[in-house]
Length: 133
Image (cartoon, rainbow, N blue to C red; front, top):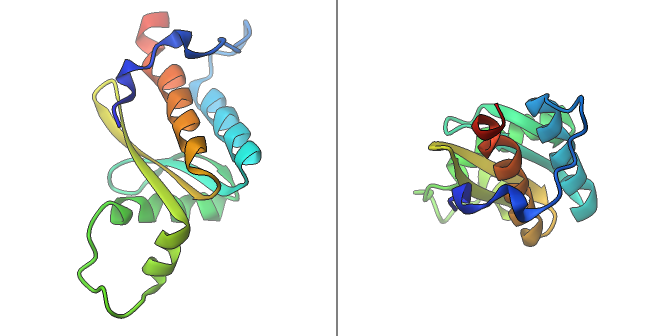
């Protein structure tokens, strides 16, 4: 999913005068989506599985981030269930491209539409940074 097409007009800009801390804004948006959608955890990871930002228990966010790249690849062993298979059943992953940089948005549990809302929030918070600078 390429979220570059999302505009800043998708929703109201909730940043107040002191709200220029991108990572804090990203964390608050993820936490809001997590609470509203019953995710155990929600995380943003880079392509190698390193946690960039998350909401929920830190260990759960790190685990989601680490498994996110694996969720996008086909597993060669499809006959014997592994721990990864069990984790991937509950996990949702979306590939996002924001200003040419690919990140993985992943959630444990929750509803699928919530990741779409989180992707739009990522685009608002991360995608428009150059325009406001």
